[in-house]
Structure formats: structure tokens, C-alpha cells
Amino acid sequence: MIVNLEDYRRQAQRALPVFAFDYVDGGADDQRTLADNRAAFDRWQFVATMLRDVSVRRLDVQLGDTALAAPCLIAPTGYNGMLRYRADQMLAQAAERAGITYIQSTVSTASLEDIPAGRTGARWFQLYVLKDRSVTVDLLRRARAAGCTNLVVSVDAVHFGNRERDQRHYRKPMKLSLASYLNVARHPGWVLRTLVPGGMPGFGNLRPYLPPQYRRGVGGATYFAQQMDDTLNWQTLAWIRSLWQGGLYVKGILTIDDAEAALALGADGLILSNHGGRQLDGSVSPLTVLPEIRRACGPAARILIDGGIRRGTDVVKALALGANAVLVGRPILYAVAVAGEAGVVRALTLLTQEIDRTLAQLGCRSVAELGPHLLRRREI
Ligand SMILES: Cc1cc2nc3c(=O)[nH]c(=O)nc-3n(C[C@H](O)[C@H](O)[C@H](O)COP(=O)(O)O)c2cc1C
Image (tube, rainbow, N blue to C red; front, side, top):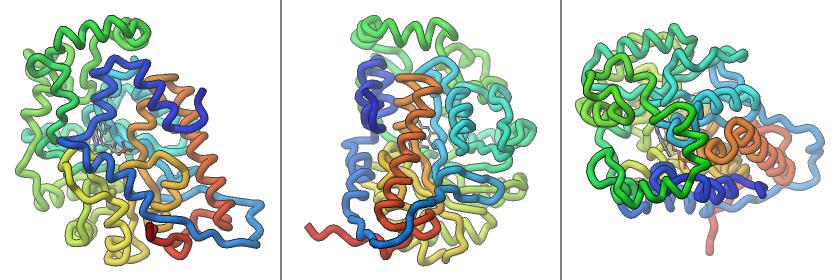
């Protein structure tokens, strides 16, 4: 039975072969940051205000050209086709139905052209910068042609995190171990939902750039790992800014200096993130640095945050500490793995109901009324 987002995680653990579940669920090294992203929310407690008329409540927010029915976006995640055939299309469709936004990853299984333009108009694409700059130029051209109006440049994954839970399932890179194959055989439902309709999922956006030897199955992952550009720097970001006329968000920011530099360079917003604990283990949690970055950048800066959002109360805490909206990663992936598009719609409905209930219980009529006065640091 599903009554909250954690239920989707539990069911996904049963529905997915262990290599696929661990790919989504895992973090880097000892997973300290993964755990801390959750713990950061528990360091704050609500101080509710009483005797206010909260009979009418508004959850909507506006981010530039993007109207959101609730202050949530679906985080960009790569290789969703491993969870279910056409998972990316389902996420996009479910976001549309919920009135929020799906951010498509550079390494999505579906290509930019595979996702139909939504009715709401504002579409978001997440860019990884590869060594071959002509790929970036072409991806931006395709994103524009596909109707994307907002670009998220992820800057925290130029060097991949050490994800040991992944490594344990492979005998060599991209070759599953015998134990993993046997485990796949124990998940015929996943095989039917994922491999039978579409074969081994690939990397739709990268397909035009792949050398022939990398075109089959997961070969794109090998190419991608070799192509990540670790010379990425502020000049590169300025270059991307000059190429992209739409909204531009920098994802992976965690310091005041970087936040101010990104905004000074012309970014329209920041996404405070440690990549869901999948990169630098021991990294600070975005929620921890959110108040100081909001203070430094001022009330007008557009600041989004992700990492560990599992409850409506988490969303409300993030907004009260200064975020304009949040990105949700893993719970959405568990939901699509378990129940496809309907699962994602249900997950988003649950999250939205929880946000709404929290507002009412706090004595707030809209997300605009949220602020740090509604929170207190936990003392014990
Ligand atoms: C399976 C998986 C794949 C991801 N792929 C990408 C990606 O392609 N691009 C990106 O910017 N972030 C990627 N991320 C990070 C998410 O965008 C987001 O920062 C993170 O999942 C938020 O934390 P949460 O999962 O705790 O909500 C990925 C995360 C997961 C779990």
C-alpha cells in the first residue's frame, strides 16, 4: 500500500533487480552525504502560528516563464530507461498533469526530440558539458528546437563520484556479474516492463555523437564517462551564457562565492545541490548552506535546492529557509519504476497534499508567507 513516498522506495526495492535499485538508491563512498541530506531536515523544527484563517491556500510559484502548481520540479536524472521502458516520457507527462516541470537530463534515455512539447510551454533541459564543444553547441541547438526555454548547467559532476554499490554488481565496467544476471532472472516483471518492449536502454541525446563502437546498449555510458570535461570553468559558463538566451540555472552550487559569481555572470538562478550525495562524500548539505546563500544573494535571487526531499514538510522547511522551489530526484524514480506514469502522478499528488497540509498546520495561506520565523533549530 502506498501512503507516502518512502512506500515507493520499499516497493521499488522489490520490483527492480538489485543493480538497478542500487544505481538509483546509492551514494558515493560511505554514503555520509546521502544520509546527511536527510538528517539536515531533522535539524529544524516548526514553530506553528495559530488562529489564522487558512481555509484558502495557494501552493503555486512562478520561476521566470515557468508557472508551477506546486513548488517542485522533477530533478534531471540519467538513464531512466533502466527503470521502465519510456520512463522519461512518463515523467514528462506526469509533470505536465501535475502542473509542474520535468527537467530532462543530457544523459536521458529518451532524446530531446522524443519528448513532446508540453501544453504549459516552459520546458527545461539539463546540460553536461562534454570535452567536444561542438556537442554542447549542438545540444543547445536541439534543446532550443525542442522548445526548451530553460537550461540547467550541472557543474558538480565533471569528475564522477565513487559509487561502490554500483561497482559490486559488475565483473568489469558495464558487464554485469553472474550474480547480477541471476538476480535479473528473479525479476521477470522488470524484464517484461523494461527490456522486452525496448531492448537495452541507451542514451537518446548522445546517440548522434557516439562513435560506432559505443552505439550499442550501454556503450554510451563509456563514451560519456570519457567525455566529461574536467576543464569546465567560469569562462565555459560565460560561453554557455552567450550561447543560451533563455533562463539559465547553475546546478551544484554550495558556496556564497560561487553563488555570487554565477549570478554576476548572468545566471538566472542557482540550484544548490550535492548531486543527491552521489559525488563528493562528506559534502555539506544544500539545506545547511541555504540560509547563508540566501542572505548573501538577497531576496530577488532565484534559489532552488535539492537533496533528500521526501516529505511535504521537507519542501516547506526548504522554502522557509529561503528556497523558491525544490527538485525531487529518487522518489520520482522509485514511483516510475513501481507504477509508471500513474505512480509519478500519485507521488506528486502525495507530496503536494503534504505541502498543503503543512501550510495549513503552520498557519500559512500561501508559500509566500513561509519564512525562517516558522523554524527553530533542534536543541536535542
Ligand atoms: C539515478 C540518478 C541519476 C542522476 N542523473 C543526473 C543527471 O543526469 N544530471 C544531473 O544534473 N543530476 C543527476 N542526478 C542528481 C539529481 O538531479 C538530484 O540532484 C538528486 O537526485 C537530488 O537528490 P534526491 O535524489 O535525494 O532527491 C541523478 C540522481 C540520481 C539518483
